[in-house]
Image (cartoon, rainbow, N blue to C red; front, side, top):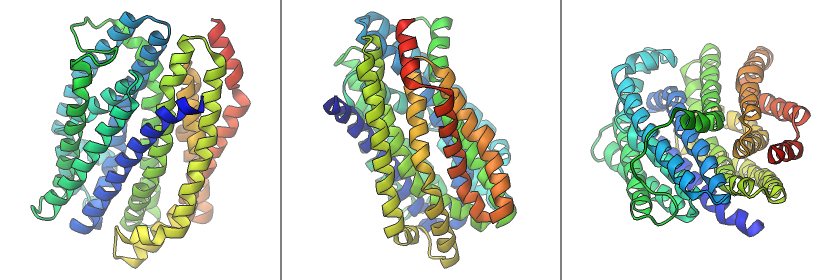
Amino acid sequence: MTKEFLKYAIPSALAMFTSALYTVIDGIFVGQGVGSLALAAVNIVLPFTVMLFGIANMFAIGGGALVSKNIGAKKVDKAVNIFRQVFKFLFIISIGISLICIIFTNQIVTVLGATENIKPLSVEYLRFYALFCIPNLVGIVLNSFVRNDGRPKLAMISTISGAITNVILDYVFIFPLGMGIKGAAIATGLGQIVTVAILLPHFLMKKGYLSFGKVKIEKERIKEFCVIGFPSFFAQASYSVIVLLHNIAIVKIVGEVGISAYSIMNYLTTNVYMVLYGVTLGVQPLISYNYGRRNSEKMLGFYKITCRSIILITAIFTAVVYLFGPNLINIFTNDSNLANMAFTAIKINIFSYFAVGLNLNTLVYYQAIEKPKYSNIVCILRSVVYLPISIFVLSKIFGVNGIWAAAIVAETATYITMRFKTNVEESTAEMLAA
């Protein structure tokens, strides 16, 4: 079981880490090549780009869970049909999102809380990012389906290749060509095109179970994978809410310098989040496959191994933050006041990721066994219920440090609540008996 876990979890975690790392490098280039206001502008747009990531993951995990379950149950034709419907519907949605972003860019960044100083850069970044919505969304979804089709290493290679392309083009566009913040957005889009180009032959040349082909979209099938996948969208949407609430609270207490500090913290902690999410995504095909085979021992075994891995990974990242935090932050900025604020923020906030990882694991597990109700509860608790309360109360008592600590309280409270409300073993037995 451990060997299977490592085969899927390691490539997925490495891919996500690389993806997060290029986001960090993107931040370094933006901070050093364009300025601290540009960093703040990217952070303003972050809730929206994270929601796009959530839409892609809704399709990827909802469709992937159904595909893996049906492959495990020896219903390959049904699995292929589901994949084709997911892809076709995603392509249509991607075109619509791209057009909306391009046409209503000003309105979107205004809703996201851009100040007059930050707004022009935010508009420029989002508008060029929106041009590449199709490869951005399709790349994430195809990557997940390749993993569900038994080729986790190909998924890793495609993500890493796209990330390397992004880093190289980031440097070229921002420094030699002087394209500013739009260069960062274009580099991200071109990197995703490389990812898609590497993944396409798997489906075009029928190297696994899944392949492209004509298919009629069925309303019931779309509803089925959307219901299962919705918590993944909700999780990313809730992360967007988390960023938005923090931005609003920080602006009120310390102003734009606080947004820049929060942006630096997000660039660094994104590495932790993406690795933890990568581990849970990597294990999802194994849980779904064994759900199709009705093997509860393996399903629960993978869940427990993931929990232990999450604790270990977060402990390592916490140690890195305390040992090398100032050095990492100085890569983003030469402003000592900003650097000190960012280091204080990350020293406090990093502890929230122990509970974040466990909550993500629970969320994805319930999706994999097609019980998304509990996954949605996790999202509601962490972002809609506990976080606003934590930010309001702790900021009143501790000021800006209370804002940095709010996620620890919210995520821990969510984890404790779910432990009392649900039981993974009982839920697994219930779903297998149905």
